[in-house]
Image (cartoon, rainbow, N blue to C red; front, top):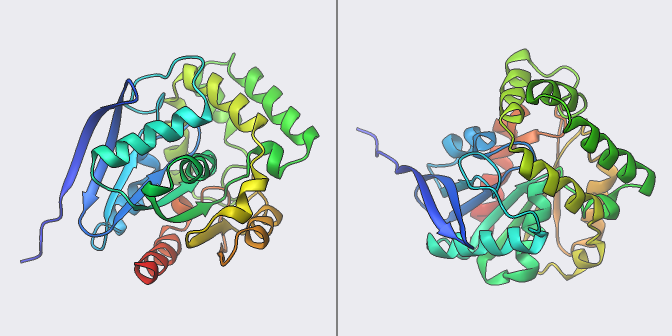
Length: 271
């Protein structure tokens, strides 16, 4: 008979907010941070696929999923402080911390503010903020588009945002899964996150990252192209870059076996 692994849906009161999370498995802690307009469901394939070796925890960040909405003046530092308090409340520190897209920006801020919580970093399809990784023209265009899209009904917003997020040949079931998550977004959160990531430029921090760092990028990522991965790889000492073929911006969903294998190998090697 196989060993039954622990699975838990929980809530914790941290940083003045009710934060929901999924926790699966047993072993070294692995914390997963989703991108904007999604929630812990984004990591379903990692919660299932990595629970045999790790205690895998995926949060619903403030304003996502079943977590409460943050106040309108919430900052990137507040997201990181909230996360640090959650990690310590659940006795997961220090953890391997993986963030994709906006979640990778939060992971970098967590390391800056609470390095005690971070054993290693896994940064996937992310940015040093939009200002830190994209041209000013692209940043301005994305921020303007986000503002326009927020005026649409949720279903239309999700459909309008999807193009370019997945690889062009992504299967229909994956498109629908991501569309469902995006349709469930909290409007309050969308209004906070877009200006935060648009204004953010944390390129100067990359050379100061002093924990093992794995970079995972979809080969066809149109949101954060491979040149951004190469800039991260050049800037972060002793980082490792894994490029996943047949994948766009959501590499953990599009190619979960390859993504999980890279994470597993890296985390077990770093301890």
